Image (cartoon, rainbow, N blue to C red; front, side):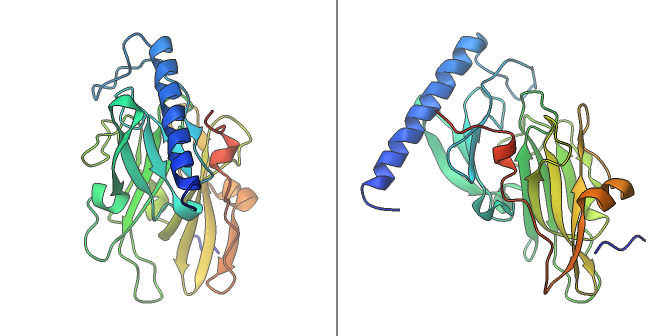
Length: 248
């Protein structure tokens, strides 16, 4: 096995700004798509590109209903991500933690990364569910999948989910969006516990048709980094900014 080392005035103003942004998003989407979006059947239609409503908030259609959703990712780690489904009039519903939507069991850590990995106009998700190790050896993920959009609201499932090997090469602690290929396809950076106090930055580069690929030794040597729990490897904090513009 390879070893891989906010104020009373400011808040209402911000809320109004985001509502106007979403209204503009929906108007633009309606102009570009007479069908008003895609349903759970997965029919493809044109849609306005996702945009950033702040450094850690992505606005885009995650479930394919033609309404933008709000994905918040505090710290860009993927472990505290929440989703608010889009509603009529440009508003958003209640906030759901990804751990809740993914059905995480007691003690499990849920991680997720959201981006248009295939650059086909549809937001996708990579998910990982794992119980942290209580010893030197890393735990194996119970669920590790790449889920091409659109995703189902109730459990973030996808009609075309496939296993991802991110859970096979160590214990995932963070999932982040990165730009290693310098192209239009978002890549994945994984903070990985590889055992015996080692923390590595693992990478998965995306391909045009398949999303994040599998582990590749040459790409790991080129873009990855080996570290320890005391000196963890650097992780990207601007991945979304590399691919999405601020909402306007």
